[in-house]
Amino acid sequence: MNDLIHILGIHDGHNSGATLARNGEVIASVSEERLTRRKNEVGYPEKAIEEVLRIGGIDAAELDEVVYASLFMHARQYLTDLEPWYKVGLTDQRAAAQQPESYRRVIFEERKRERIEQVCRHLDVPEDRITFVEHHLAHLAAAYYTSPQRQPSQPVLGLTCDGAGDGLCATVSICRDNEIERVAATDRHASLGKIYSRATFLMGMTPWEHEYKLMGLAPYADPERAGRAAEPLRKLLKLREDGLGFAQAGVLSTNYCYEYLRTSFERVRFDTIAGAVQRFTEEMLVGWVKACVAHTGIRDLVCGGGVFMNVKANMLIAQLPEVRSLYVMPSAADESLSIGAALHRFYQRSGVTDHRQSVLENLYLGGEFSPSEEEDAVKTQFGGDAVSVAQPNDMNRAIAELLAKGEIVASCRGRMEWGARALGNRSILAGAEDYRRVDRINQMIKKRDFWMPFAPSIRAESAERYFEDPKDLKPWFMTLAFPGRDDGYPDLAAGSHPRDRTIRPQIVTREANPDYHEVISHFDEATGRGVVLNTSFNLHGEPIVYTPSDAVRVFAQSGLDHLALGSLLVSKKKEDRF
Image (tube, rainbow, N blue to C red; front, top):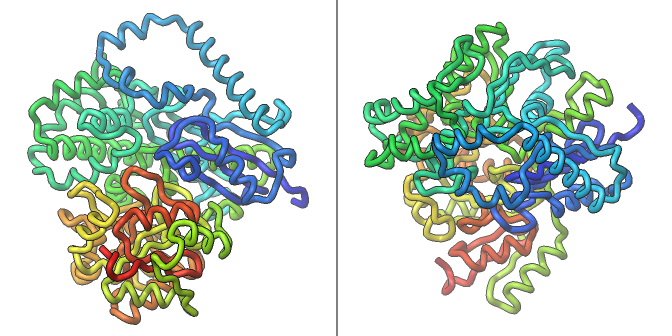
């Protein structure tokens, strides 16, 4: 193909963002939160759109198509005030059922017109270049087209599962070449994801953001108590008779289950609630996957949607003997929708069946910054001699030497990683062998809940020391958990879940990130440990840093002592250190 096809994907719900694809290659993808500095930003991602066009070096006039993920998306104000439509029950469900279908159609058409007009105003593109891709199709397209290349015409089983989008909460599809054939779907009223998000809200946490906190808390629950406490959930949702989807176990829709959960879990211990919700989620997902594989006979899976952010459930799916291979879309929640929408439209309009150009070898899809921007950020924040600034001849070795001495180093280098997980370029790094570093990092900057684990980055050549990957799933993007090996556990104790000794690893290859790989290699040479602790570089409650200015501001406001900023190694004076 000689002509370039540029497609802009837009997701304008929660975790909003934009993606630029060129001939099926993801050139840039950025979440709006990184630019507005508001966590999990919602609404039309104006800044992210402009940023991906800047990174791609094109003007809006050069776009062949602008595609929205989701046929319908609520307006911003609806998505920023969850309480009125979260704290509901059966009475509200009955009242909502009385709304005429014509009312829903009017709302749908009004929002579609508003969304089209927003793009036209912002980008000055013709209306006939604006298209839409259904929500779950976008989720699956993101997972299918970015997964490692399969053999031509090899069928793949595609699964999506989330809270809901465009009226559905789960789908089962057979993917082959550039065709996606949906064979089953679950209505939004029988949503596994909504149970998890309502439980998150019930426990005083933020839905669509803190579900991972319940997952992290769950291993502390007594298994027997958690199993008993999950019984009310089993009365709410079940597998369909054919196993290919979920169904209401009674009259109550999961859209309206908050009051039921509040009553069911009253005076149940907080850790037991987390354990019950996690256990039920694992039961449902494992049973669903087994039924889908049995029905289709396809053992190679690709998965998308926010429920597949649950790395512990993913671990159990990966361990199933029925599953030969498993690829979970990195950061599979709604931030991935803009990628899926852009790729789906490319393959539909081009007819190309070779997907190699879409495979994600790495996730460094954001912007990078010049040395002058980095120097200006330090000068603006610190002025004269408030910090020491060095330019090591070998920055990778300098970082590794600090880590080997037990220091903690923030890193803002190269292109920003896309998605919810920091993968070395906007990370806080430390040796992982001393569990006391968890408390130190939390006191310095993270302020994480006491039960929440950190994660390890492991050099690819060292991976076998720390966990077994018998199906060669290549966990490059922190999408799967694994049991840690007993003999390697001392090297990564601070990067594991201390209760069950599982890890959520990032395997770092030289091809994906040469600098980060070299940092861990030098660290391994110095210490004999091929793994470092990696957590996202941000203040508590803020998005991961993006620009040098973000990095320097967070460095100044935290207890961090060292910042690797491009070619600059910035250190606080000893009297000012944590």
